[in-house]
Length: 535
Ligand SMILES: Nc1nc2c(ncn2[C@@H]2O[C@H](COP(=O)(O)OP(=O)(O)OP(=O)(O)O)[C@@H](O)[C@H]2O)c(=O)[nH]1
Image (cartoon, rainbow, N blue to C red; front, side, top):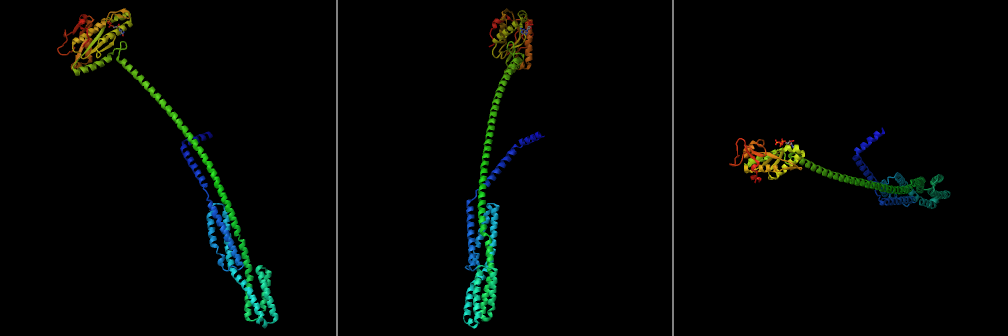
C-alpha cells in the first residue's frame, strides 16, 4: 500500500518536476521579500520626535498645573488663561497618535489611551474649576477690606448711635468672622463651616441696631462669606480631582512604554536581519549547489556528446570501410560476371555487350565489325592424356598468346570449354581480318608443351563480318551464328584452318573471296604471308 503510494508520489513528482521547481523558486522569493520587509530600517528620528513631543507635553501639563495653582491663589483671573495650553496639547496628542502605530505595541497604545483619557478628564475638571474660581476669588478679595470698612463704619458715627455693647460685640464677631473665614479658606472643614454659619447668624442678628447703609455692607460681607463657604470646598475638590486625573503619571507611563516598545521594534528588526542573513546564506549554498549540478550535467552532456561523436565517427569509418568492401566485392562480382575465371578473358555475356556496342558504332560510322569463332582442335586429347590441369594450362596459354597479338581496342573472349571469340572493330579489309586469323592460328599451334608434357593442338576458326547499318540490322546473334557456322565449316574442312562466312560484309569492292555458297576456306599453308596483326 505504502510502496504503491510512494511510487505514485514519485511518478507525480517526476512529471511535475518543473512545476515544483517553479513553485519552490516562488516560495523562496516570497520568503526573501517577507524577511526583507520585516528588516525595514526604523528612523531613529521618530524616537527623538516622540520624546520631544512627550517632553513638551509634560512641560505644558506642568504649566497648566501652575496656572491652576495661580488661579487658586488668585493670580490668574480669566478662564482663558487656564486653557491657553490646550490647542498645543491637542496638536501634540494628535502627533503622538500618528507616530505610535509604528511600534504596534498594545501596551504603548494602552498608555496613550490612558493619557488621552486623563487629559480629557482634566480638561473637563479645569473647565468646572474655571467656572467656580472667579466668584470665590472675588469673595476672597472682597471680604477682608469689606470687614475692615464695616469695622471702621461701626467705630465711627454708626457706633456712636448704636448701643456700645452691641458695637463691641459686632466688632468682635466681625473679627471672628474674618479669622474663621480665612482659616476656612485655607483648610475648610464642616465644623469650621458650622462655626462660620453661627457667626454669620450672629452678625445678621445685630443688623437691626444699624443703619440700612451699614446693613447693606453687612449683607455684602455675609454674601461673600457664603460664597467662600460654598465654593472653597468645591474648588478644593476639583483641584483634588485634577491632581487625581494623573496626567503626569500617564505621561511617564507612555514615555516608558514607548521607549520599551521602540526598543522591541529595533530588536525585532535586528532579529529579522539575522534571519535574512541566514536565509541568504542558505540560498547562496543552494545556488552554488545548483550551479555545481548544472556544471556536472553540462560536463556529462559534453562527455556523452564526445562519445557519441566518436561513436559516430567510428560508425562512419566502419560504414565507409564496409561500403568500400562491398564496392570491391561488387566490382569483383561484376568482374566475375563479365570474365572467365580461368583465363581472365571476358565471357560470353560481356562479349555480347561489347558486340552490341561495336555494331552500333559500325552503324554510325559505316565501318566493319569482324567476329572470329575459335574452337581448339585436339584439346580433348590433352585432357585425356595429361589431365585437366594440363588442359587448363593450355587454355591459359591460348588466351595469353592470342591476346598478345591483338590491338588494345580488340577483344578476346572465352565462351567456355575450348571455345574462344575474337572481336575486331573498324576492320579496313577482309585481308586484314584474315591476317589476324592466321596469327591466332599460328599462336595456338605454337603451343607444344604444357606442364612439361608435349601437346599438339590447333584451331578451327569461323570468320564473319558485319558492315554499317545492314550489319547492325541483322544483329549480334546473326553475326555469332555466322561465325559459328563458319567455324563448323572449318572443322568439316579438316580443322587447323579458318573459314570466312558467306554472309560477311566488307567495305568497298573488297568482296568475299571464294565460293558464294560455302565461304572461303584457308588452311594454314598461307599463314606465313600474313604474320602481322591488322594495322
Ligand atoms: N582442362 C579443361 N578441359 C575442359 C574445360 N572445359 C571443357 N573441357 C574439355 O574440353 C574438351 C572439349 O571437347 P572437344 O571440343 O570435343 O575436344 P577436341 O579434342 O577439341 O575435339 P574437336 O573439337 O572435335 O576437335 C572436353 O574433353 C571437355 O571435357 C576446362 O575448363 N578445362
